[in-house]
Length: 125
Image (cartoon, rainbow, N blue to C red; front, side):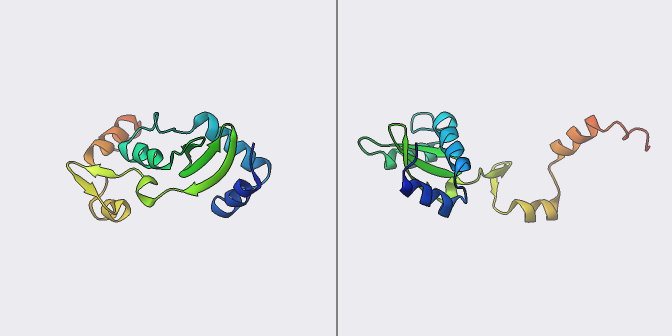
């Protein structure tokens, strides 16, 4: 299921080895995104550039697994723009979410949703 090269790269880039690495590879094969099933354009574009005859790239847990049929050949790190989903507030993109929420607080919609399920909120008044 894994080559020796992929075992080395898995240990180097993800920190997994042994049976854990095999389990992650089998999960990547079952649950990962291929070029056709990737949810965003950037992920599809990244995977389309990694396709070569006989090999299938799959995105899983922020890494790109390269498979030859059902055997993992290597594991690649994905670029930083594929690691996290951007947080949008209105029409502008929030560049530093922790700093933004520390300065301005959470959006009003979130606070109203919390109050809706806070059963002690009316008793305090």
